Structures are given as structure tokens and as C-alpha cells.
Amino acid sequence: MLAAGAIRSKNAVNILLQTLMDACASAIMWYLVGFGFAFGIGDKPNAFIGDALFGLARLSSHNTGSGTGRWLDVVFQWAFCATAVTIPAGSVAERCNFNAYLCYSTFISAWLYPLLAHWVWCPKGWLGYGTQSPLLRTGMIDFAGSAVVHMTGGLSGLAGAVMLGPRMGRFDAEGQPLPLPGHSAVLVVLGTILLWFGWYGFNPVSTLFIDTAAAAEVAARSAVTTTLAGAAGGVGCLAWTLLRTRTFDLYALCNGVLCGFVAVTAGCHVYEPWAAVICGAGAGIIFDLACILLLKLKIDDPLGAAPMHGGCGAYGTLFAGLLAKKGYIVQSYTRVSYPYGLFYGGGGRLLACQVIGVLTIAGWTLAWMMPFFWVLKRLNLLRVPPEEELQGLDMSRHFSRAYYMEADSYNKPLVSQITTSYSSPGAIVITAAGAAMGTPAGAAAAGGSSSPAGDAAMRSLELAPQTAAAWSTSFPAQPKAAEAAAWGAEQGQPRAESPLVETPFQQALPVKLAAGFGRDVGGALLVQSPRGVVGDKQQKQQPQQQEVEGLDGGQEGEGGNNDSSDEVIPF
Image (tube, rainbow, N blue to C red; front, side, top):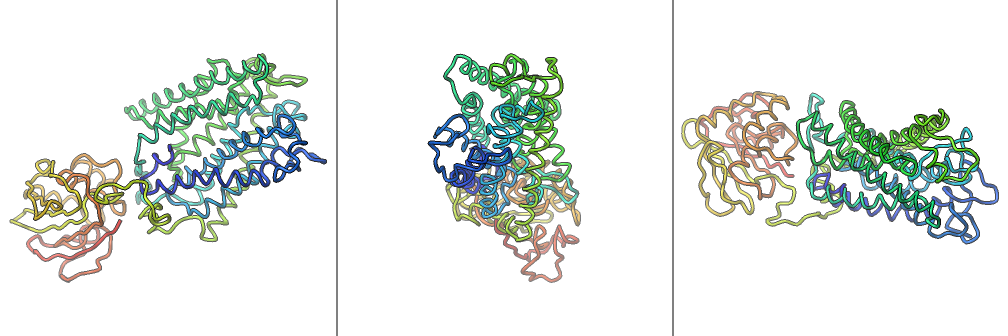
């Protein structure tokens, strides 16, 4: 739900399909090999990889992680695997080939994630705090997966985003980022609330048993610290964004909450409440800084999955090495010695293991996923063609839509047809046609008057000479994106997302027309202009050879000619 709301509506079906396929593909692979690689303890167990329970064979007689023959371990641990598989979808959204998605989701759930789970959580592993022979006689604390789950998913998404490249229209010609916001804040908020609720099924339940008073206390404390970290993450990210942009940003609040959850997941069972607040607040700020860094590097992560899960997951894992309280560790684990947090006087062994764990998981993930995505890219299987990306993956790949609205206006420009002509010296008449067009509400703001043009689906707007002059002079040949965006913003209230992304003028044009013609319009964009075709599309028809190519390609034509040329720009 959150992912669907955070992307454009033309790709909503695609991301929903991917999310469900995560559960299906990971469940099958977890059953066949994943659970065996992660928790299988056979005749010759080793610290690197499991060697039993493939296809869940002889499960009733084998250790499943928390006991012998526990079916509950299979489904509970699968939920963590499915989460790791889901995370990269946010980083590669809106341009990844669905076949490539199936390949990497299968690979992560069958190989990449299970071995990390074996190292940290299987009794025979070598990296975890609760294993039989831990690293440096200490091991890494990662209670519910800040590193094993979230870092793995986030860095896998980062590898995919790097190999895919940015979405079309994400950066202008000068390399500056342009906004491509999601289509539904409501879905984003609902998704955040559902994840908040679901996190209580991950962190507190990672005790695996609540059969003693001590275990119940660990689970309850985990719930309290999880709540406080998420709340502090939301407030911290919101406050930081307010200082930076002077805006109370809803998306910053939602992202901050989730970042707090990701960060506290490693040590939620061994933190004091005040430590959880610090952990969560720091995660919200780290997320925002990491997002800025990715934009500087021209890496496009539509949902910020790599900063949230990769960055905050690593931060939360390291945080446990500083503020893990000894009394809570003793209550949570059964072992000979109990190294604890550096700031409590526990020495540096635990922090050293946390650092080694973060580096190990990062290295393992990137060492596999970068070549994996590179191979898909070389085979031309990674990214969809440009025309399909522009149309949207819902229709181009799945022949479906997330929303069926009146007048078939799904994901289409503000107007379906635009015709320009000259009615009097210096004045321009713009006639726009489209389905379900309402009464022009902003004609006065656009500098002219409006009148019906034959039927309810067509409106005309006459621009006064001074306004027409502004249209004619605002765009020199080869306009820069920044100038075009600034001009468009001055003409009225711009949309959060322009459906026309190919040229600066095409982005600004619907902003101007929106003031006069409303929003509920659908169809392709037809431009008729005495100066030639508007935008950077090449003219297919040039009946007036004496005319030049138009605003984006050369000098303007003379204003007294009523002849026009046509160009259909489908979206």
C-alpha cells in the first residue's frame, strides 16, 4: 500500500503485483531451499550454510532454529525473508522489467538472504550473539533484523537502482533533480500505519517464546522501545525537514517513523526507553541526509528504500554496540559471558562485532547483487523500453489499471486537444477539447475570457494581447529546464506531477491551461500552432514549409498566419 501510493498511478498495478509476487516466490523458494540453507542442521553442520530441511524433509526430527520440529519457525522466518525480498522493489520502481524482478526476488530468497540468516540466527552460525561459537566470543546483536533483513534488502535495492539508472524525467539536462512525486498521500499514510502495527509482530515476537516471566518482559520491553523509536524517528525527521525546507512535510513524518523502526529493530530488547528515543530520532535525520547524498550521486531511489533500510539498518546495528544494557542482555540470552554496550562500560568487543557484522553483510550483499543486476542489464532484461516507461507499466506490461475513472481520464494530460490561432492583432485563442471538461474556473486568472466551443467537451480561451505576448517571449530557443520550470510556476498553481515530462515547455503548458480548463480531462495531446509543433517532438507534418520548427527548435514564426501544423503526442 505504501509503495503503491509513493509512485505514480500509471505504475500502481505493477508495484502491487510485485508485492504479492514477493510473498509467492519467496514462500516457494523458502520451502525448497531457503529454510534449509538458513536453519538446516544436518549430519555435518557448519557455520557457513545449512545442510538439512530442504523441502522441509524430516522436519519433525530436526532442529528448526528454536527447537525440534517447530512448524512455527518455518512460517515466522519466512516472513523475514519475504520482507528482505520486498524492500528492493521501492528502489527499482517504475522502470524495472517484471521478468528481472522475478529473477532477483527468487535469487534473494533462495541464496542471498538464507546464508546471512544462518550466520546470525542459526545456533551453528558464526556471527550472531546467540550462536554457539560467536565471533570474538561475543557475536553481533541483531534481534529482529536491522542488518540481516533491512540492510540486505536496502543494499540490494541500491545495486538495482545504480544498474537501472534514473527514471526518465528525474534529472534535467543540467543534472538537477526534478520531482516525480507519488499519486496518493492517503495510501502512503495508511501503509505507514499498517507497517507500524505489523512491526509488533516482528520485534516483540522475535523472543520466539513467551513461556516465562523473563521472556514476556523482553517481549513487552521490545514493544515499548519499538513504539518510542518510531515516534521519535517521525518527529526527528519532520523537525529536520522543517529546518531545511520550512515545510511540515507529511512524507518526512511517514519516512521518519519507518526509519525509527528499522534502526531500533537490532537492539529493541536491550535498550532503555531513552536510548530508543535517541536511536529513532537519529535514524530520521540520517535518512534525509542519505537521500540528499543519493541525489548528488544521480541515483534515483523512488521510495528511498536504500537510505531507509540500508542506511538506517546499518546505523541501528552499530547503535546496539554503544547502548546495549548488560542487565537486559542477560535477561535475553543464555551464554557464558555477556559483553555489552561501550557507553555502559562494556568495552569495545560488542561494538567491534557490530562493525564487522555490518561490513560483512554489506560486502556479501553488494558482491552478489551488483554482478547479478549487471548480467541482467547486459542481457537487456533489466529495464523496460522508454516508450513503455512513459506510458506506464500498468498498461504497457499488464494491460490493466489501478483506477478506472470517469471519462477514461486515467493518467492522461490535462487536455486532450489544444488548438491555437489568432483572433485579433496580438491575441491568441486556445481551444481545448477533452472528456468531462467542466466550466473554466480560472479564465480571468489566465488573462482572457472563455466561452463554450460547440459542446460540453470543448472550451475556448482567448488570451489578451499582453498575455499572448508573454507566451511568445517566455521561451527562447533551447530553453533551460530551470527557466522553463520557473516560468510555469509563475503562471498559476502547478500540479504536483505534470503528465508531460519530455520538455520544459511541455511541462509548463498544462499548468497554464489548467487555470482555464480544469483537471478532469483525458486523451492524447494534439497541438496545432502557426509556429509549428510545441515541444521537442519532430514535426511529422509540415504543410507550411516557410514556418520554422517552433519554440524548442528555432526562431518563432510570424504571428499573423492562421495556417497551422499538427503533432499528436500520445501519453
